[in-house]
Image 1 (cartoon, rainbow, N blue to C red):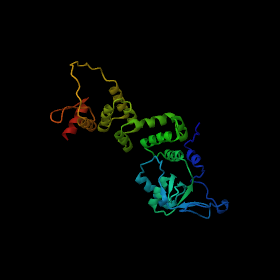
Image 2 (tube, one colour):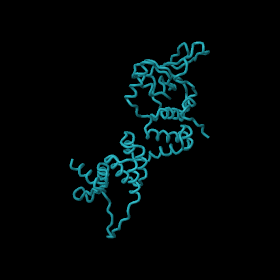
Image 3 (spheres, rainbow, N blue to C red):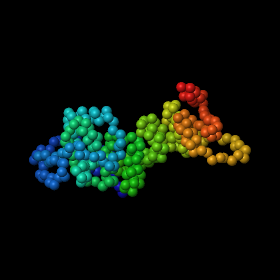
Image 4 (cartoon, rainbow, N blue to C red):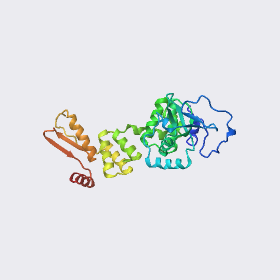
Length: 309
């Protein structure tokens, strides 16, 4: 069974280090040996501490975090200018004159912004799976990942290690339901995932959208969330109504469905997303009609204002 790393000490357990930001400074006499055969680019001071130019550091290839808030980086940079980098950045030798950041990419970016020519580091080696585990746990501890980044990281961890959701949950100190709900977000269409990343919709909205079985109806509801500012509860109610519509009287006119122009279907989909409601294009590019549906007085007024704007 996979070993559990709680968020309180998970990163230190993975790194094999007990270094803390408030750890008392070591004295020269506390170091009994000096590292030898260090890779080119790494320096060691008289206390045994390792230093490197941050320009030699490259991002962890399994770093799940893609977004770094510029304002928060500036704040950290100002702190580093005043106090230095207190906790070493964990790195791995890439054997080509550069080094991978295993934990501490935010500190590295802020150090570059502060103009530092060298920062403290801890040199280690990790498997691909461990690189992802370390980066994932570090970001979760700091609540730095958006929902989609977190979901992709869980899924990648499952792939790399051949792990089940329960095992991933143990490694990152989460319960299985949290990991399962996160991974479900990857079933959303890419444009809706992007809206979740940008903050247009919340994770609650996203989970409600996942209730909708039909992709076209999902996009219609998504348009309503963005266009009408639906709450999570309103979205859940509408999702349930979409999945369980009132029965309609079937027309039996014997007409056969014709193959539709794929370009018209694409235009129809774009209109659905733009208007946030059901749209049907009947006919061809040469002749036909566009039918726009509304489901309440407010919906009618919203569409009228949009078209009349």
